[in-house]
Length: 84
Image (cartoon, rainbow, N blue to C red; front, side):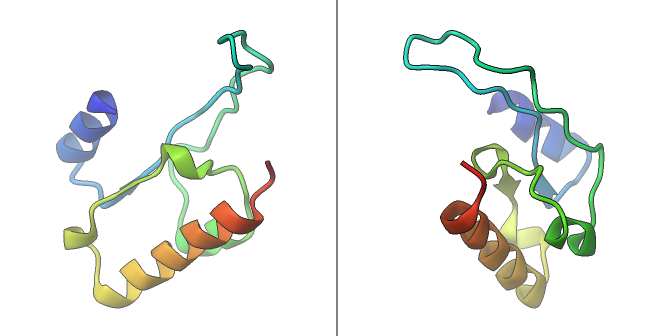
């Protein structure tokens, strides 16, 4: 998380996400790393489930109120209806 926060500050980003990899309860890697695009806009995010919500960091102070609400709702939708 420290690397993500540093990246967010360095790039003045309001919303970031990262690649991820699944593991079992003993820490054994289960699949290859899920690579994610370097950038994605809101419309692309609506059509794509590559963002794993546990990798998301949002700086709500940098987003407009309406955008913040849309992103929060999208993250909630992914949490409830994501591809687990």
